[in-house]
Length: 416
Image (cartoon, rainbow, N blue to C red; front, top):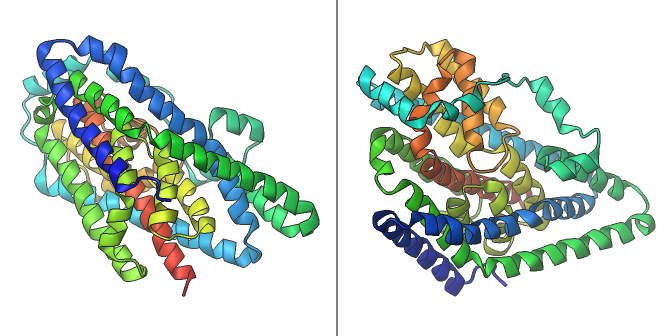
């Protein structure tokens, strides 16, 4: 059974469009407070329901999938291919962002008066949270932070990389001990996985209402005028995201998999819709996994490894956004970035994206790290906060699409 049949998909799309219209009316007629008080909580409840199943789904599916890999070399091969794909597409995404930002120069020509007005309109509180204890992550830090000193704490705090590491270790060890001892444990977690999948099916029946509530709250809060405040910057980011999806992912599917490009994008549409509405690749993970397995034919053992890992470390949309945003802010302040500084942006953004939480606005935190690494004023973040939510929704779609494309490519390479 497909997670989102055509009828439910149509309802979700109708909910999306109805939410936009309702949000516009709410903003124009002055009852935005009603939307925030009574409509938005429905959307938040929907996101909470999806988020509720993410950690048990990731742990159970990853453990079961790993334990079924009798050949440890096969697991290492899948892991290497997945990591290589994610790192390559992330670097390409940043380079696309930098190329477009340098060619189109969205931040050039802004007057001092306009820049000051934009910064002041957001308030100092918009900048303060990012100007504290920012540190450029190192490879050593990232690797050490993957290993949980307390697995229970990792579950409680939702540290996805640590949960993935613990699930992988548990699954590998279950595959190494005698089957009469490991089988009861594997059967238990297979049952847990089935229960969570059924729970996801039930939750997804609420998707049209959750999407309506989320979108209407966003539009009522910002209004459609937000698209014209920094339209050139927004269009550069969106153009980069579209190019990355249309060229990089399409070519990857066409060249490295047996899947048709049209079939791939048709199969991943439900997850893209949820990602756009929630602006969270982690919250979309259950839907992405279901689309990959049911619509795209990705084996469960590959989907259960590549997709949770991707929701944690694969942030192509966020990386592209950081490239454009960094150059944009530097241009606004009249700074000319050297080739070495732009190379620093690439390296820092790649490291910062590993471990970035797949939650709304997490990209802003990593953007602050990138800005600090090359000496661009953090106050510039205030310039883009007005359109942050819209762009966050768009780049979440790219992140989720990238996760699914990796799963398809790796699955095709393993079936040869």
